Image (cartoon, one colour):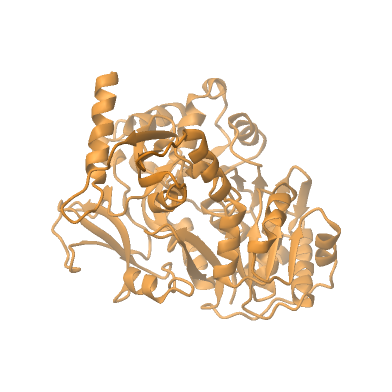
Length: 511
């Protein structure tokens, strides 16, 4: 049974309930189901066979959800892609996934069409709001495909340690297990709940739309994260839940309008994707109250490893909980097993630091077309997350560090090697190393250390343009440090620990 079958059951039961609301209006569940079934018919008429991949490179819009459901009704696999990515990066994902159709939105269509030569052969490149899209959505509706629980539903592209995107294969069973864990650990959901989507629909906010669609709740789709828009949605709709990266939550509580806002209609803000400073979390609790739930997960086990539930954010006296509790990521989610192991996979005692591993029905099948990556991540039925942490005696997990050099800025993952490889395309750059530096608003910012070839001249503006031409804007370094040579160990490997030390010393001298 597919997720589509279950959503369509809900649509039959609650045909007049509002399903999706965006700037263009509201679709009831009956209209949402019909448009999705017509899109499914359009996908089939375009020649897409069962299991074919469809890239959804879309800005936040209600059309994303009808395309997603349309894919599943037709027995296809959706490949949602972050709208922030550079068109060349999107082309790489389309090629890697073997996509046969790409659906985008008007604001993204022009830049993507300019890179058409980099795209794989497609049956169609279609933008919403056009005659071609209307043709797809005007096809005869089809009945829902009788998919197996193990059929692939969502290819979630997440960068690997090399920076090359890897497609985590998520099945209908994975997504259903994720949704059931939401009900068990975060909130019960009813038809009068509202899910406000203000983060990219291609990632966590889109994934967690499913627990609401399955129960007949309303999706309110905002074009992006704007504090005043979010506060207006909370004031207008009932029982509002939404996802916020820590930087979004901090921006929300620090906005002047939040001081006088009425949060009565707010049910839950579930936050995650990056560490949150305890001081910021306490400020949010004082302003919003006990309506915050922290989640820890990955695309490989969507949104679902551990959680710090709302009740645990407060102590017995009603004040914010102890720092060590707020600084943790909570306990294993329902149906999840979590361990901390050493380098050979042996369990470590409470308090000792090692790699976090997990297994459950949420864990991906593997990485698309990447057997080496799959073998490294999945061992003996366990997902090796690459995150380093420790469990206490009660099973509460605290993340201590990352085994990879991942930078998390504004809730978005940035892999240094990807940026380094772009910088090294400049003829004047001899060496480049990218690290993350603490930033009060974004969590981390990208800093590039660059060594220039003898006799060459390299301007920061040239490196900026090189990045803008090849990778997403948010991955571009915010600062450059030019060095005569980069520090290395005896094996010639650049010492990022030394680069971090230099930055820390520089900050100390500045203060």
